[in-house]
Length: 167
Image (cartoon, rainbow, N blue to C red; front, side, top):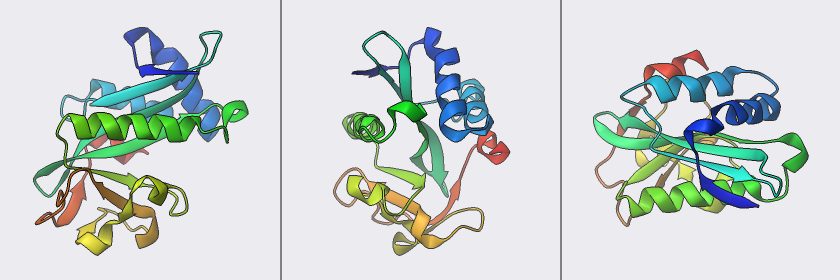
């Protein structure tokens, strides 16, 4: 398995990954729309490639804001069903976290399983005074500082770019 940055030619394969992983087109449509959105354009996008060159996983970080403070959204993360539960999603997530940290980003927000994302360092966003712009249980709206004190003074409502409103 190789984890590498997304290439332009990977778009159709990435779409297939998300359609299969989520059994619907919404997340694949989100990825396509984010690529076209100047404000949210993907900052970090990685794929997992199997031995025969097949793309079997994808992860994306896009620009969002907590009030007016730049942040990143981890969404979506998808792995082909036959490749799930083999650590591929975790490797993809670790890669984009490392990239964001190295690029000097301060934090990442995710809407996801409270039993999965804390292993990477995500915590309840509400505990930092950060809220979702829509009703969601506090335990699934999470944030992770990428640097020490990365969330100091950061409070308010997350502002997602337009493509997210379609999901």
